[in-house]
Image (cartoon, rainbow, N blue to C red; front, side):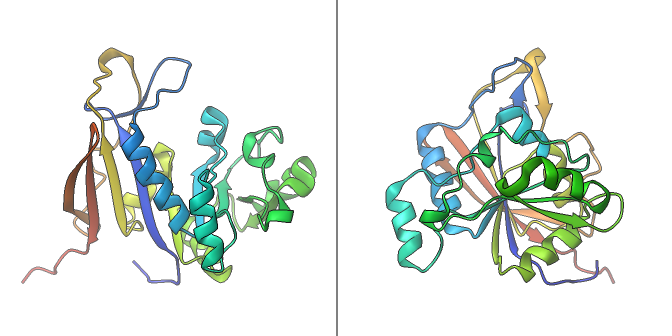
Length: 237
């Protein structure tokens, strides 16, 4: 893979014991316990930006905020904005301006509006929809390529990027070896026939060029947290 300037990427996910990100029921299932959620809050506070896909915005309606006043104050002490930059990408440009991510930026507190990537052909329509609620960046071509998106974030000064899903983004980043670390929290729950969203659908995900090695395994409350690091394959012979 051709190298290009990009942020350091931490990818995180929480799954059931049988490999699902969520069940098939309408209400979102929270897999992480309080101890794991506390660690995730620390990760959010330590990054420059948080990225999720548009599907996650529609399904979960997250704020993507650092909620702890202590963690926000620590960011400000280090010279950062109280909140990381919130980032998403959408192929269709179909995002509801009433979503939580578009309601919570407070410029008086140094918070930046969300940054939304979309193909150039849908950018103007999305700008008209969101108006001043977000910055819309138009990507060349018919889809937002991760290499272009990550290079653009690097140009904006983003050095640490936390990616929180959804499943298609997780698969793409792992498939192409773009995640530097992959934090996988495994719950004790088994969804079985109620499983709705698998972590990945492609059993050929890990190729010889983009393998990941287990670097640590820890018990965090009721969750088992596995951390994988990117491990480029060693040429044979």
